[in-house]
Length: 254
Image (cartoon, rainbow, N blue to C red; front, top):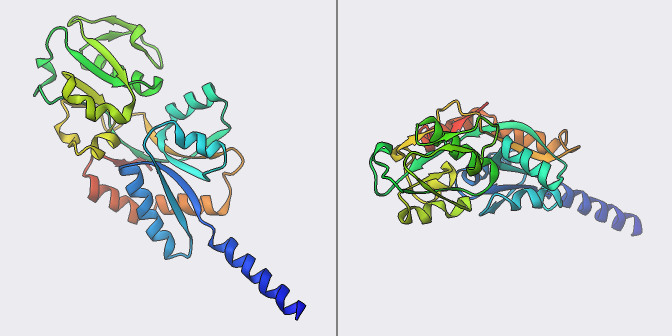
């Protein structure tokens, strides 16, 4: 009897281990939609993926570093590198995912040329996406900035229309849009708020260097479940899902 009970317990433990899910952190919106689609494909391979959604850019890295997640998929590498440097995380990008071109939106203007003197412009308050927003504005002649890798509002060298810049958390940008003349908004938050990226006054080019990546704790890169998720993300089925669903607003980067 003891022998049979031991076998039963061992089999139960093996079943529980096999049923354990890979916990993947994402931000709400397109990243979450893609991860849920991957989870559907994974089930057909008897591979469980639990998708955990966040509503900001900071918590998914905190959760990964503290081992509450196995990986995350929501950020571009420049943001990851800033987080590693400022917070000391031992995290690593393992694969490219998608590009989401940043856009400038307005409920009051139909062209960036209509931007009035003393306009109010809102941009993301995290260093990398704030710098990314300033680069987009500079590229379109709205301001001049120092040629640095990650500019801040202190790097603005010319501001001919005397624009007032307000920095707020990226998820709040769409909600704050009616209170400003224009806002620079990340595509994932724009889509989640029901904004059409094709309605943006201007967008980054589709070859934007801000490619999103899958991230794991350093040392976990070769884990079987992580490699399975990576393979599913880079599958033809997911490429077709992205291209059909987002019609160029979200672009496969592999």
